[in-house]
Structures are given as structure tokens and as C-alpha cells.
Length: 172
Length: 298
Image (cartoon, rainbow over all chains, first blue to last red; front, top):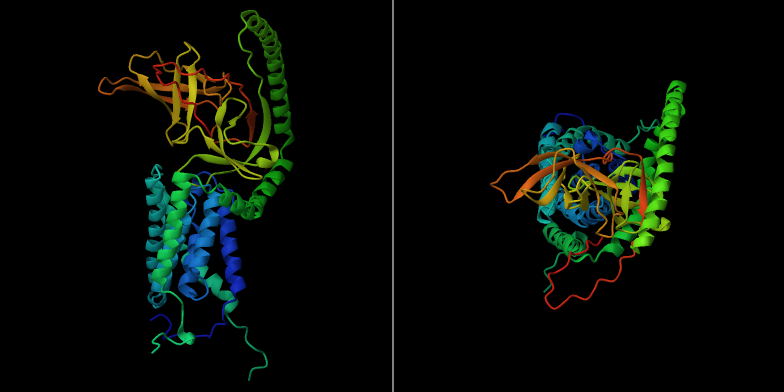
């Protein structure tokens, strides 16, 4: 178990507004004018954040969020309407079902859960596009998810910061 | 007897049921979008919502560009100035020649009572970003419905054709590049006038002439220009240059690869061509119609 030996601070409840803010920020990051090789290996930030909140706060973020942001991504990308919505709702499902299991692991092992989930997300999009007559864009297509896995640890740390309570100076 | 749990523990449908609902909804959307083209309305609405975010996301890069522009060295500016001056001089000479030829052409066409070619107007647009969808070759430009852009208009740069407008949003539009796998351009060989269909391959910098018989007269280095018979592209715009011809008797068609002339994947400004071709009414098909060429719609 992850935290048994260490003293645990009781985290503050996460604010729904903060979840919304991170999701919009992720959408913004996806919408940056990427081009060339950074575009090829760019992680899908929205997928990463959706998965993060589905694992850490399955009661606050779930299918509605995944569908809405999936549709926004589809329109912004000009891709088929519904491909990201489908992939993200699968991701939300996996996150919600697996959240207890994933959180019981150490950070390194959590990454080993996150990468396959994000790769599955890519595969769903790939299958949908293949069925619609698209061409496989090459193996670099999957690089983004590996990089996103590497971002999991700093992301968890950053997103937990607002929940850490400030010590009360009057506390005896 | 009521066996349902008290509302305190009632959490609605299970995740699996929710997943099924979402998946069905998404698949419904996918089918409606891919097969039936029903969803332009939804797309426009979501596009309006996402637009401010898109502009916001583009801001840091454009500010960076502007700062970069500000610190251009004087040497570079002077170099550019000299080069552009020389180019202008050369172009001016060509333009005089072109004007004379164009007048002569009009005159000759009058004499022959042939149909006049319609001049095309252009609208400059800025490329905002490359399409993020890795399955297609697209760019997004900053002109849309508000600037009377219509789907189907050709897009060119200073050298030649780069693509065609395929989707128009209120303030943006999507240009599908000629290198996209599903994009075709009707072309003509400048050397001998042979018509052909040029299709993208999905790779940057590679195009392919489709369905060319093995004995057709195409050689490496041939220039291909738009033929204009599709009423989409104005005739005579440079498109590509034949880079390799492979004639293998084992196949039905020759494999002819070409290189796009215009900087298809590298430009900041492009021109949207506003060309309304008034094609005369198609004649009524005779008894035994051979099935005329289908015009490629947008």
C-alpha cells in the first residue's frame, strides 16, 4: 500500500470549479497551434485530465464531462463528430471502475495503469477512423500516450496542491 | 415490498449502463456524421463555443511571432527589399507581356465566339494552425462565413494550388490540402495537354496521378496545371511536377508520383480564390448516354 508508512494529511475536498478549470486548461493546451514533430508526439491533455479526475474523483467527474469535452475536441480538430466522445467515455468508464485499484498502487505502478488506458483511447480513435476510411498515420501516433504517462506523476502532484490544507497558525 | 436502496445510497445507473448509453450516443453521432452528413448544425454550434478558446490558445504564439517580427535585423530587411525590388521588376515585365497576351486572347476568343474565361478574385487569409487530426492533411485559416467563404473554393499560394475549402465555420474555415488522401484535383499536363486526376497520398510532399494507362505520355519533370473542367479550380494554376514514373506491365495503370509545387505544408498566408464558373447547362443526354463525367461537388 502506498501511504501506510508515511503520515497522511487529510486533504480538503476538491472544488468542482477547480476540476472545470483544469479541464478547460487541458482543452486550451490541446488547441495550441502545434505543428510539425511536436504535433506528432503531443500527448492528449484532455484525455489525461479526464482520466485523472475519473480516478481521483469518480463522483465529481465522469461520463458527462468526458462526452462534452470529447465533442469539443472533435469540433476543434475537425475530425468525425463523436470519435473523441466515444474514446473519452471509454476512458471515463475505465477510470471509474478501476479507481480503487489504481490508487492502491505506488506512483510508478499507477503510470503502468495509465499508459495502457491512454493507448486504448488511441486505439478506439484509430479503429473508428479506419472504419471511416482513414489511413494509419504511423507508429508515432502512439508516442503521445507514452509521454502522457510520463506526465502523470507531476500532474498528480500539481492537481493535489489546492487540496493540501494550509497549517493553522492558531492551532495548538 | 420495496427492495430498492434508500436514496442515501442511490447512485443512479451503474457505470456500465452509463458507458453503454454514452457509447451508443457517440456511435449514433459518428454514423450520422460520417454516413449521413446530418450534423452540420451541431458542429456550427459547438464551433462557436470553442472559437474563443481556439483564439485564446493561438494568442501566445502570435504574440511571440510579433515580437520576433519586431526584432528583425536591418540587414535582413535590406536584403528582402532588394530581392523583392528585383522580383517586382521581373514580374512587371511579365505582367506587361501577360496583359498584351490576355488582350490578344480575348480578341481571338471574340473572333472565334468562344466562351470567355472568367477572371478570378482572391481573398487573402492567414493560416492559423495545422489540423490536429493525424488522419487527414488540413489547415485552418482565419476567414469563414463572415467573409463569404464557401465550401469548395480553391486555395492557392503564390506558386500554385494548395487545397480546397472543405468546411466553413463562422470565423474559420478548414482547408483540405491536396496531399490529403481523399483529395483529388483534375489536372492537365502542360507539355501535351493530357488530362488526368491527381490525388493525394496522405504523405506530405507526395501526390499520385490516378488511373493513367501504361502507355500514356507522362515524363519525369512534366508540369501539371489545373484543367478547369471540374468547375472548381480555375484552369491553368500550377499544381505539381511529375517526380517519378514507374511503368510495370504487371499492373493495369502506371504509377506516377508527383511533387506539389506550392509549399503545401509551409505557409502563413494563402489566397482563397473566388471563382464562379458559369458552366452552360448540361445538354440533355441522348438515347444511349455514355454517362458524362461527374462533377466533383464540395
